[in-house]
Every structure is written in C-alpha cells, then in structure tokens.
Image (tube, rainbow, N blue to C red; front, side, top):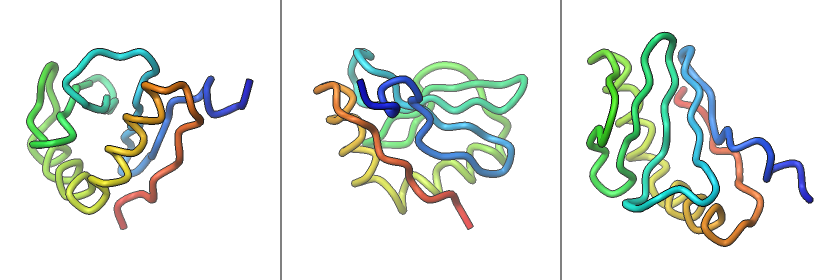
Length: 92
C-alpha cells in the first residue's frame, strides 16, 4: 500500500498540521491541528464544522484554503476512493 495512505497530512504551516482522513463522513472537510486546538473546516465554505481555532489561525487557514480549494476537493475525492493524497503547498 502506498505511503500516502498511512499519512493523511496534506500541509503544514504556522505550527498547524492539516489532514484529510480516509473514509471520513461528508460534508467534505479537512482537519486542522494547532496545539491545543483542533477543528474541522469545510472545503466548500471554509466554516468550522466542529472544534475551535483561535481567530488568527482561522484567518490563515481560510486564506490558504481559498487558494487551494480545488486541491482540497481533489484530495477529498482521493481519500474517498482510497488513492494517495497529494501534499499541498503551505501558506507563504
């Protein structure tokens, strides 16, 4: 099985780790971890679906997600179909 199937991290920046999990439930979303906080963020509207992120971190995540929305959609599809997820460039 390809390494990417074991490592759902799709990006890291500003002390945050962003992941999409295989066999996760709709709506399409990604997980953001920034100790001690974590949140699920929707790919279509960038809303927090669950959890919490400080305002500054949420602004960074939303800026990044808007730039990379199509790649996020692709990775959600890859996860649903058990394909290797692609890394997405960090926010610069």
